[in-house]
Image (tube, rainbow, N blue to C red; front, side):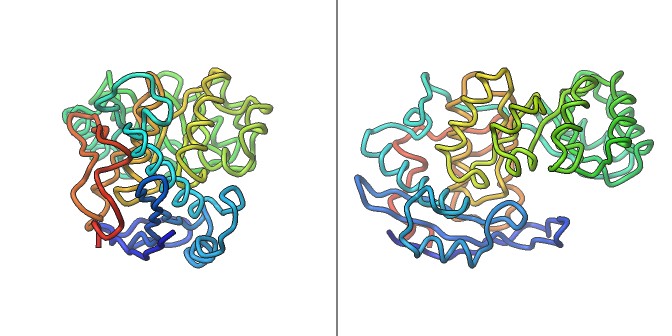
Length: 330
């Protein structure tokens, strides 16, 4: 197994609770059996192991299921890519996709801004063909966020609108927001409460559908199911430990009547394409958070999963993407 370091600068810094992220660092993983396969391990602070821990894990020789998430993703994806190429199948078919899928729907994401700007950005996304828009909330007061939602609904009455609070609200604040949101046709609110509060999320579902992101990874699938805490699971293959784990989780969610939505962790095109393959393997998948390539100012190469009219292309050649080794992206 070959491991190569990379650093991909972002178009502009990504603001997080742990400070700004200016680039995405990680490792390309190459295997040679049963064919040449390429994987990507791109740790994200707060979601996976650190960059140093990822490198140590990749060099440890430990079994796959003893690796931390990003390292496991890199090794797992490389192996799956090699196996799919050996079988002559695109990755999504190798992962269990039952029919040919040329593209999957994706959502646009609109950040925090005043009501007028927010409405203009959502309208632009709808005009560009995006079937759903995720609106970031929680940085302002509840009243101000409701004003933003109202402005969006006036400007785009038919848009599928999702909200993402990133765990910013207390139970009281979330209930206030949910009560006010009932008249705006919100598809779901993602992570309204801190990740540790499964019971609080379960209670909120009585008002507006709830999606779990951070909470899903902190507690695990079984605990979230037992708590009846979510209508939607946000599946991040990099944070889950690989496309295979994400596919397993999608099946578990569907079996429990929960909708799976696949997203990236702002990865390079190797991992981004793999997440697209995961989405393509899920029948009738809802719009997913995969349109993140534009956040990078530099990528490994030409985008193998371009976005057009609100849909992202699914690679159809054998394996994940048309490449034979990390040298193609040197």
